[in-house]
Length: 263
Image (cartoon, rainbow, N blue to C red; front, side, top):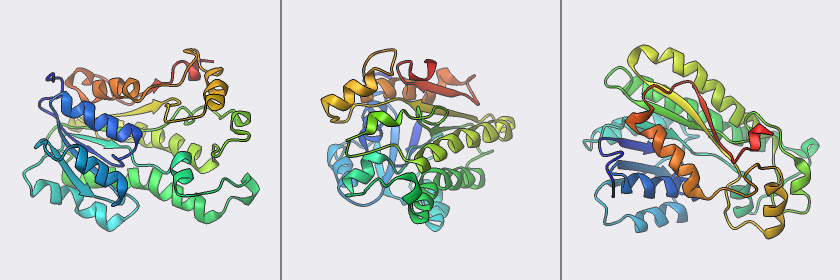
């Protein structure tokens, strides 16, 4: 265990996925107090089981698409003596999540408004609601950080051919929300600057999560590094953004994509 984050209390939404759970493991190892949130279910249960003996880990059920739940979350946390000084907007509906739910990936012309709005509500509106609640309950009381999670598809179009024959595909609402995330970052970075608050976006690339050899081969051809990322490689950059060493970094998108965005 090191002490890179020893004075940080980090609040993270959507913390039960492959990246969220990796962030938590690494943050705890770096000395942080971590407040994980997610929907009830097997991902939340796995987090609680993994960290049940760590007094630096706290968990709250939270649906980021619910305005009423978000309106009370920071007061609930503060009532337990916790004061988050890093907030991480990580919750998102992703293609792999939809596969896990048995979801289908229709052609664009057949995309339902319901699916579009559900993704918007979770990925982008949820990030807005968290930021708005920070403004009400945290901003101005003490210096803090907001980190929004985008994607390599935030500012780059997907290569649709790599998804042919795969059980999941890139979908329009995901790209749109991840582009919007960075727009929110830029707006808030200037708006909160007078309060000594930094706001940044991290844009992970293609992260390996049990993908087939064929998919790995297809996507790796588009990446300078020639391979998909390991979750810990994204966490390395996230820990920097959470740490005091990133104090002069604000309004930025940090691409951790093996060079995908450079080609």
